[in-house]
Length: 212
Image (cartoon, rainbow, N blue to C red; front, side, top):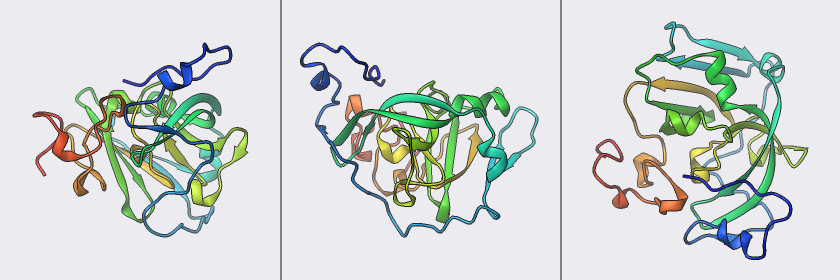
């Protein structure tokens, strides 16, 4: 599970207490991703929620329509599997929980696959995706995301390692059974809880992921 968000008035040593095992504090924001930065074409951009929805239908938004959804701000840490942590960033965007309320999953839905440009994907439990701190971010600390950091849309899930929050997100698939995403198929842990230091698939306990 994740730790509380940063707040003013913390006691000395509180910052260190909020670092997961093996992590170090990062003051800047390094650019890390696999593959090229996609070109944003607003007229072609579409966001989809599909799969095991409650009514069996998919829902799509244009960029203009998605931008009109309720915009909220959350404060959350970002933990990269490469061992840096950014504490207390302010993320602005559409909460994942808002999408879940707009497009309810079927009762048997247990997991989601988050899809991004170039077919990149990241799987997670529905409970992690619907966490109140999870947000489809368009801004960080009041500034619009750059293309290198995921503009126009990046998922932030503070309770998981940052690879679980893809850049350049284009949709969410509701699933009734777990399925590994891009990095999970390539040796990363299926769950990705930084507080349990779940970095790699060889650390998985029985039941923590589908067969590789």
